[in-house]
Structures are given as structure tokens and as C-alpha cells.
Length: 130
Length: 488
Image (cartoon, rainbow over all chains, first blue to last red):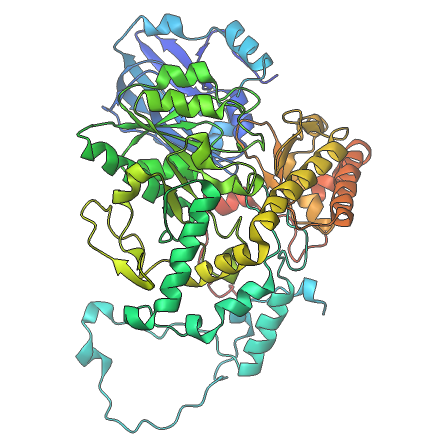
């Protein structure tokens, strides 16, 4: 079972969300990175764009597949990992650290509670998530 | 040097001053290119084209041709692609002078034979699919999809409805969301059940008056027939939603059932899959699209019509989505597909589906102990196995695919459908003999055994191909698409 940090929240589309004061940092999980295989291309929105929970905010492409990236919460995108498109391998190397994608200033605080806890996400993976 | 070890580029054969042509002295006045073309379009230096003799060219390409891997030389179980044998009579017919040398702009009166062939092919495809009308114009399956979605769009618009979304299952071919987006719709992904079937509750949840169409592949991409398909099309129609069938897997249902009878409003045909016209190198594709009567006014122009015994191209169709393709589609493919249908006949086409299904199930049965079958059978024309068991031992679907190349087989589709972990999608088609299927299954079983006893052999494959394993990650991250001389 790939690493699922306890302190993070998760989506069923395999994004993680990390609370940092009143902001939320977003990336994809180790499980997603492993399933995708070597990531070769990452497309992220610009700072100032709006993210909508459960809607795509970007695209990640690996040697196997192209996948949409889904926002865990809604809000303004206040920070983007601009180094990622030049170094997409970071997503595989350090999905929960240097492979982060966005920071969102959430507009709907209630959405946080709807995200999966680490235990729920692990259970979801164990049930053969796809 | 054996064919398999030949790895030269034509550029590497270049020797300064060597030429493969000899032109006579010019007997017309010459002009300086600078007086004819704007400065911006002039090269500063001549392109570095290879300098080779005629014999160099012939030998080089003859050798490369010996590296070709095709269905005429090898088993090619590439799932979803229907790599069946293409009968050579198709090629004979496509070369009949009256077809091959006919100019597409020849007047109708001089093109009656060609127009008749197109009219009859459209009618035969309509009969096969249970549709009311067919356009032969799209040049490939994806263009057929685009034509179909544009017709659906025009249909809703003509009724004064503004629908903005198209539903596509997560098991779909990538072309479905692509054509839908190109036609200006928002794509909404519908999660499938783990066995690949449409989740009716999930579908019902998405169906509203903003949905223009639901696109679905039957049999689905896991090689399974959708058991509740009639319920699905009825559910969609109740909400005014059009239902599109991706015809990629039509080979499995030829003569058994028809998309039109299942309630589909539109479907496309891949002539290069189901109807034995060449894939890729042998010629362009063709993706005719069939519709029910309510969508007929929106067909691309021109439509081939018949009046008495005269055939004509009808351009006066005010509701048409317009023209999609140069001239009348890839006509040479129409000749081949027509020839195939006429040589097979109705009984023959039915036996295509029967044998395609039998062959796929035979493979599934023989592999079910060595690999995890994605969905318990029986399957339709293709089966999907997962290498998840092998992955635990360090061998992935990619490794298995590469090892198959060493053992003399083309690899199945890998990592598709996306909803199956470590997927290997195997489509044998009806034209393979039991001996070939057995040899392939033996190779697959051997690889499963090697995974347990000597995984390195599988991980290091291929070792017998002209090039060893390529670094596909680096190729994608740092594409180098142009030859340049090696640094000396």
C-alpha cells in the first residue's frame, strides 16, 4: 500500500489536500503517481484563476495515460508550483512534498469536511479504487 | 548483416556529391529565387538532404521493410484495433482502373459506377447497423464521432434546445471526450461499475435537460456486452438525450444484433477495423457514420442519391453540418470495404462475429490461471487480463508486452482500459487459427512462469528486436524530433 500521510485529506480522484492556516495546498497522492507511472507533462492554471471543487484544474500526463486533476475545494488559486512543468518527474519523486501543485484560498469552508480522511482514503484504495 | 540488426538512417549513408538523379540541361530561362519569393521564405543555406545513389535508396528501404511487423507476417492481438487479415481481393478491386484512375471531380455522368458503389456501401452499412442513413465521408473513427456529435448538436439546435454537456464513461476510448470537446461540449465522465458496465444509478444522476448525448462503446472496452443497453437507451431518450455508439467493437456483434435495434441514434463504423481496409501504412482509414431518420437532414454534404438508375451528389441540404473531408471521403477504402462485404455475404459476416468471440474466449480460458482476468467471462471479441499479480513480483504489463516481442508476437494493448490495473487487452480477431492462438497463449504462460522464476528475463526484454527497450519517459520529456549530425 503506497504511503498515505495521516495529516492530509483526500479525494476519490487521488488528490491530497493539506491545511496551511487558512489556505489549502494540493497535489496528487503517491498511489496516483505510482499508477500513472513516469509523469512527463503537467499543466497547471495561473495564479488568480478560480478552482471549483470536483472540477478539473489541470492535466497530468504520463507514459501511460492523460488524466484531469480535480480540485479538492473551491476558491482562488493563490500559488502554483511553477517549477513542475519543467521538472514533471518531481511528481513521482516526492508527491507529498516538492511535487505539490497548487495553493487555494478556500471560498467554501464546508467543503473541507467532505474530503476523505487518511483512514477513509486507505479504505477506498483497499476496495480496489479506480 | 541480418535484417534485424540493420539500424542505419538514410542520413548516415550520405556521401558528399553522390546523387541518384541526372537531370538534362535546362532549356528554359532561369530566374533567381530571390526575385520570386519574399526574403522571409528563403533559406540561408541548402537543406542537408542525404546524398545517396539510387541503389543506396533501394537497399536501405528494402532492408527497413524487412523490419516491418504487420498482420501479414505476425499475430497482432492489439486490443480495440481489430487487426484482422485484409483479403488481397480488396486490393485488386481498389486497383480496377475505373476506380483507381477516376478523378474525384469527373462529372457525375462519368462517375456512375463509383457513385453507385458508394450508394450501395452506405445502404449495406445502414442495414448492418440498423440505421436509416450513412455518410461515408469521415476519414477515421474519430472524425465519424465528430460528425455524429455535430449532427446531434444541430438536431438539438433545430429544436431550439441549448444542451451543453455530453456524458462519456470512464472506460471510453480517448477519442470520445476529444471529439465531444472539439464539437464544443463539456465532457462529463460517468464512473463505470468495476466490471466495466454502465452504473445505471450513476447515469440517471447525470441525466438532465442539459445533456445532449451519451456516448458508449458496445461491447465495452473490457470486451463485455452491456446487458442493460436497451434500458440505458430508453433512460436517455426519456430525457431527450441522444445515444451514440462508438463502433470500434462492431466486429463482435456483426449479424448478431444491430445498434439501431438497441436504441442508438448514431454510430460510426471503422472500415479499417471491422471491414478489412488497411490500418495505417496500407492506406488511410475510413469512419463512416450512420444515423436514425431524425438526424438524416444533418448529414454532411454531399449525400449520394439515386433517382431511377441515375446516381448523383446532393448538395442542397440546408440543415447539413457541412462538408467534413476533401472530395467524397477516402474512396479507395470504400471500394475495399464494399468488396469485403460482398465477398463475405450476410452469413459470412455473422460467422466473423462468432469466430471473433470464440477466439477471444479461448484465449481468456487458457490464460485465466496464469493471469487475473479483469472480468469473469464469457467475453465478446476481446479479453482484458491484469498483470497485478505479476506486478507484485516486479514485472509490469509493459515488461510482459516487451517480452512478447522477443517471443515473436506483437503486444496486446497495455494500460487500457484505464479502469483496469496493469491491463493487457487482447483481441485475436476471427482470422487467426487455433495453432496461432495456442502459440500466443504458450508464450503468455511462459512469461508468467519466468516472472516467478527469472523476472530479470522479462524486465530486460526485448533482446531480439532491432532496438532494445527505449526510454519512453525521456522520449516524452525531451522529444528530439529532428536528425542532426553526430558530434565528431
